[in-house]
Image 1 (cartoon, rainbow, N blue to C red):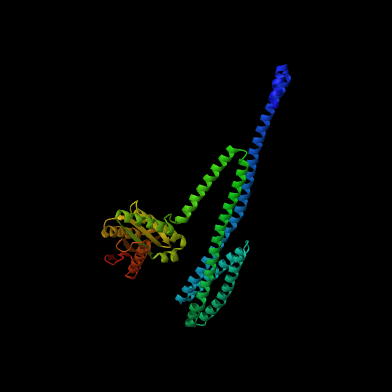
Image 2: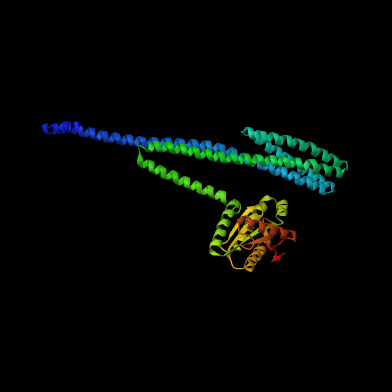
Length: 411
C-alpha cells in the first residue's frame, strides 16, 4: 500500500525517472522470482539425480554380489549332486576302465565344487552365510574321509562293505551337504527380498525429498509424483507377474493355479456347471535330465507346456506346479467323455518326439482327473483326488489317464 501511494505521488509530480526506476524494480523482482524458481527447479533436478545415482550405485553393487553368490551356490549344488550320481554309477559297473573314468569324473566335479566354494568365500559374507559354509565344510571333510574308505574297500574287492558304507554314511553325509547348500540358497533368497525392501525404502526417502522441494514448485512436484507412481505401478505389476507365473514356461504357477481354481469352483457353483482338473506328471523326464542335462530338460518342459496349451481351449488353464508336474483346469465341461477326449489329446501330444539339439527325446504322461462336483467340492479335494488318480496311473504302468473314481481308465 505504501509503495502504491508513493508511486501515485511521483506520477502526479511528473517524476518520470522514478516511475522508470520502479518499473525496473518490478522487472527486477519478477526476474529474481523467476531466477529463484529456476534455481529451485535446478536444485530439485540435482538432488533427484544425486539420489538416483546413489541408489543405482548402491543397489548395483549389492545385486551383483547377490547374483554372483546365487551362481556359485548353484554350481556347488550341481557339482555335489553330480558326485552322488557318479558314485552310484561306480557301484553299478565292474568294468575297470569305466570305473577309472568315473573316478576321474568324480575328481573333476570335486575340483569344480572346491573352486566355486573358494570363490564364494572371497565374496562379502554375513554371519549366517559363514556359519552355513562352515557347516558345509565340516560335512564335506567328513564326506571326503568316508569316500576314501569306500574307494579303498572297492580296491580291496570288499564291494559289500563298500556298498554298506556308501548307503549308511557316505550318501547321507552328501545329502546333508546338499541340504546345507539349499539352506544357503534359501538364505540368499531372503536376502534378495531384503534388498528389494531396502530399494523400496530408498525410493520412499527419495519421494519425501522430492515432495519437500515440490512444495515450492508445484508443477514439477505433480510431474514427479506422476512419474514415481507410474514406476511403482509398473514395478508392482512386474512383481505380481514374477510371483504368479512360472519363469521357465510362462505358465501360471502353484500360487496362481490355486487362486484360479477357487474362482472357477465359485463360478461353477453359481452357474450349476461342472469342471475338471487334470494332474499331469511326465514319465521318463528324469532320464532325459540325467542323459542330456538340465538344459535339455528345461527345453523339454517348455515344449511340453506349449503342446498342452495348444491342446486345450483358450478358456482353459494350463499351469505348472513344480518340476515335471502340471495341472489343467477345464471349465464348463458337459460330460466325463469330453474330458477324457481332451486327456487323450494331451497324452498323444506329449508322447510325440521332441527334437533337442541333435537328440530326439520322448516322454509320456500319467494323467489323473478329478471332476467337480462328483469327486470334490473344494480346491484341495480336487487336487488331492487328481493327484491320487495320477499315481494310480503310474502304478498301473504309466502313460495313461484315470478318473478319480476309477470309472474310466486307460494305460
